[in-house]
Length: 482
Image (cartoon, rainbow, N blue to C red; front, side, top):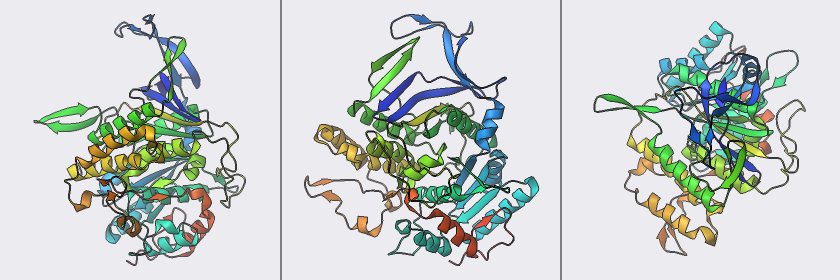
């Protein structure tokens, strides 16, 4: 795979956010290379750099098929799902690299989940793939999660099950990926984890996402790194015509406010212009605020806190800046982990965390879930920004007030579109007692999974005859008892 080199890089303390890289070709000949300057074609006009000079070359980076495979074989791909078309899901599974571990975390109704599990089992028997699946609403999963030290993920005052939401499903996927290992005499644990949505209608685009994950993780230079996908386009039918819109509405809103926040934080941006780098202000550096398709090192996944619902993707940026931008050393992980596992023990002083953003070639076709779904996504993201400690200083009071007005101006949605919160958060006043102004509800924030006993979780899931299944399992559990 060949990608353009990033034209800019933003530093917020030790957090490095690289500018957008575009996929030039899905496959490339030869070996992997760092930035290489390629002549522009006659049809590609010369463009001036920051100093007004015309630049006759484009810098690209390439990753060989062999190096892509090395990353893919150490990657677990998580597919959260809820009552999706089984035919569509099978297309997504088929697009996941054969050498990667496939993890399905379902929130479907019990009968649908039984069909999903049977289909995944048949798929693995036909292909020889390694896969896991589990149901988010299984009472046995809730008990195992609680026993492993993750009780906050369970609705203790309600139904006693793991909270509903995409963020919670992804957390379950991270826990399973961190304790899974390749089949063989000597366990080799997975080093990377990726996420793809189950509603993707084009398997070829899923395959491209997974290759982009591997290319980005190969090119990343930090132990803790993340790759986020920016779609080439998101086609919609308008007046009988297929329009290839460059970004979704929720993404546009969330990206705009994340970039405003970077500007307020006075982030240092290095913009590459020819052979020179200059400092400038942030513009539209973040273009993946709502990236459902993203991947990272498992070491990073275990360090990050988890936000519930659709806040989880934009919250990645907030959490990394809040907790690691100025921090010299990360605390030791208490997770019970063998030395060959990717679970981190210590991040050395001065270590940088990297976020790479990659623009794909394939358009992104997915099921239309309606206006309320779109509103829920951007509201979750903006509420996470609003309640972030980054915005609570006096210097950002105007920013925060403008953000509050943006959110409150769209509060005409029905109950199903409001932020899901636990009962203790519902008890909070919707009006700030200090300012007497309406405020958006807080989303739940869970502590990093590195503090949990993930190996106990895995052992308990294997012992119980519940919804948990993995390829090679000698028997299938009795299923859900809801």
